[in-house]
Image 1 (cartoon, one colour):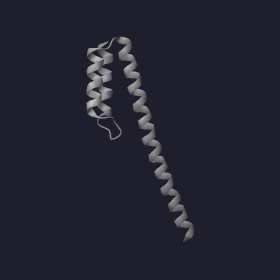
Image 2: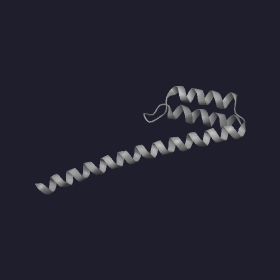
Image 3: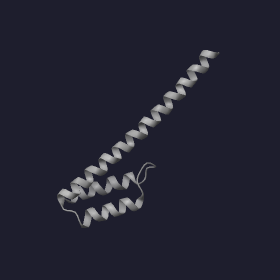
Image 4: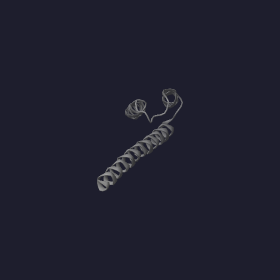
Length: 83
């Protein structure tokens, strides 16, 4: 049980430092709720939701970066063909 709480804390702390993360207040309230008002099932559900949300946000950021890199490469290819 203590291990799960520690994992949740580390994940929440990690994702508050990224630009695509939710606000610090959200994570503070979530962490407070998990530690004080949740039973084991609730903690598991909150943890899974936060991981899923963070994973989706991370994948969106990666896809946006890939899209940008591909568009830049297409532009470079067009310029080299014109020369």
